[in-house]
Image 1 (cartoon, rainbow, N blue to C red):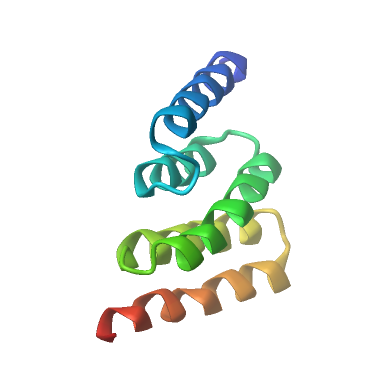
Image 2: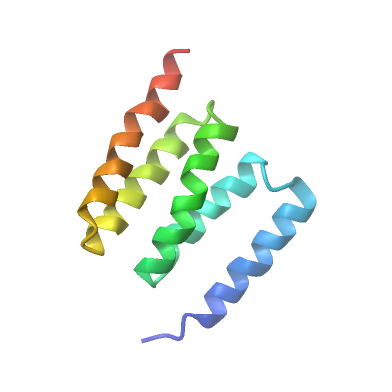
Length: 104
């Protein structure tokens, strides 16, 4: 297996650049946080990253419905993979709230 450290370092550098150039609450920075959580090879770390990113999507970018829903969906999948059924269910239940904003 590959050493995940170079990928983690690259994500950390890219995240720092996005935060500096666009701001922590910019939609592209948040999208990158979603990608970081999805591509993290350690499921526990991935869940931690997504658990921060997903609520921020919902709170800061409610107009980005699909990304918000995708984030919570991926969080649910990761939590289920970790055997944390209650957390997975909570993440899956958040998906409709993201999509509900589409009718606003």
